[in-house]
Image (cartoon, rainbow, N blue to C red; front, side, top):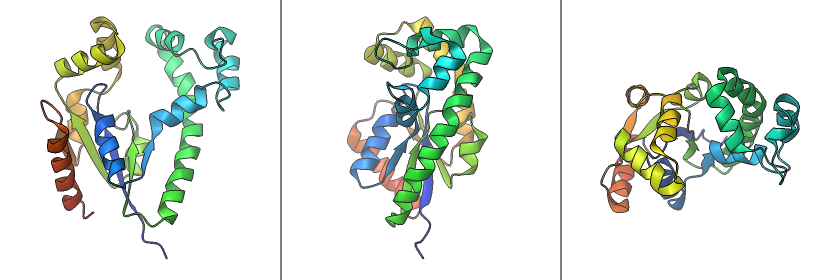
Length: 203
């Protein structure tokens, strides 16, 4: 019987550097299941969620390429509190099925751990209860804003709206089994912290 792989959830607020941490883990051989990538695929052109998005929100929420218009949907979510839950009701079951499939494939390969990159881990009781450990990538709110501005060009007001829609920094830290403080550090320093993480978790 294959030994059950340790399931580690990685999360952090927008601009925290969570993706960088996951990339380092992937380079070191850990299978990383990226829930945001799975979500995006479901709402891309030809994605499994497109028909339901069109039926629920209208054809105007599908762009010329056949993908969900993410900007229009984001604007709606800010103005209509129920829009997010309606979209989640469409997308979340699809994500769950794909995550289960990928996790089972990784488990069958006999890996020691499986990494789950979950942007809204703290907000979701479902994902937290299915993980063995939670690692939070953390930085100051000011640094989050600067990073998101640099990579996306969004204005500070819009970024702060996104931050307000996510769990607070304090809530994320409270949920953590381990914290990687990603502020003013280079990749070598972060890799060193991840080695400590591996030792603590028996990897």
